[in-house]
Length: 430
Ligand code: IMP
Image (cartoon, rainbow, N blue to C red; front, top):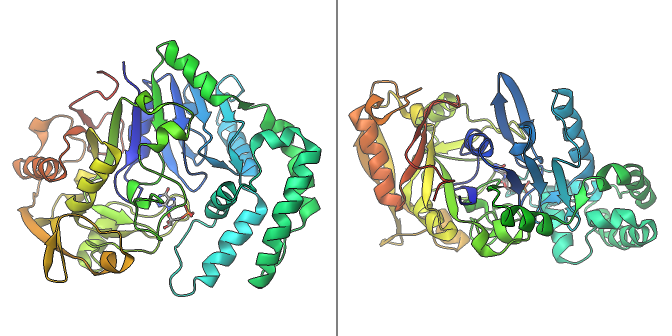
């Protein structure tokens, strides 16, 4: 049996929720390894809807261990609130089935305030963050002034660290013309919940090593998408963590060989929330059609997602960046009824053809996609459970996507329902 990492292969919102849920029902351990409560995964189990932001998807299934790894930034109040909401739906959450890395960094109210203030200072080109303090918390981690889960057990050290951190940030907030945050209030509020958080804290890398030695199946649950990666994404219009598959290991405290299969979740077209380059964006009736049919609104912020044609150049790039061995292709049914469907197969930049998205912000904004046009299909693919049920043109489209991105379809999802999935390869089986 192999361990699986699930990664968004575009700009997030590829429909990870359903696939991760299906996989987590077969895993023993589910681990979040990056991001924070900027993520939004919706699961529907036995008719009950769960909206998870920070908790790993395994939490809603009895007998699974859910882990929040060191690579995640944790808003402790958001975590406790989410635990409470999920518990109210009848799910048991105890230190037996939820473990939080003692070395994970915390998101504090000051990080939220900074996130808002920084977005305002960006003027006409904001990143369009979720304003949840993700970026500033990662900044503090790298600047070595972050507060970690384990610090909650040491009130004196915690107070010193908060004072040092707030001294720095309040100067900044004042400079931005924003209200400073009360240092002692932050400290007192943290002390109020310290025990509630610490009861879940533990040595994650050790627990995962034990699970591995016991032959348990581990699912690494990625959030956002590879094009939002801080190193490899459309910088600076990215999130502040590494979202590529390599992070699954370092964000949970395992060696790189722990991940045996990388599944890229890939939408049959492209969407993006927030600002930043999007070569195949269709700011026209095609985009409106995809947005409406695909119900493309953000689960965290409710924002309308930008929509466009499938960009094979971009996904081919993330297949390489993440070592994706197979994809789960989602929302194929959204394309039903179109006369013709376009796929971006290359870019033109300054009169030259290029086969990748360059790093330069200027180049990313100026690439022109080259399209290939495929015949659409009139029949419905919604709910198909075998290849035989798909119209020939839809099969052709999927096969062309595989060819262009250099990775096979392991799973094809044809509706939000769990059973409406065509399985070509079980990611957990070697
Ligand atoms: P942040 O992660 O809140 O700092 O936001 C940075 C960028 O990542 C913004 O463009 C957000 O819209 C985007 N982003 C963050 N989380 C998600 C997600 O779960 N899905 C899609 N986009 C996201």
